[in-house]
Image 1 (cartoon, rainbow, N blue to C red):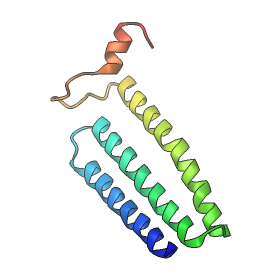
Image 2: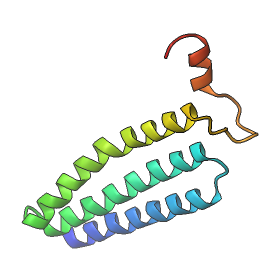
Image 3: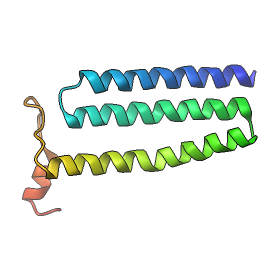
Length: 112
């Protein structure tokens, strides 16, 4: 039974990863692409790693999967935020149909 649950998590993770890849191709600017890939790929890869843990249990492979999952959850959002701030600071423009630029508004109010 645990193998079936593990495989379900792996399939869900693969679906998230595929959606993240489609978002990377289809979305219009760096910031939208970064949002799609970070959210989808983080959730997808974490789901795959959790599925591996469910299947393998507390073996060396399962423990490594959990450690990778924790590392991914901690580092992926931070890296995406740093990339977005770096892109904005270097002058990468938003998509022409973007509604607002919160970084620019915060910068104008002196919150940076």
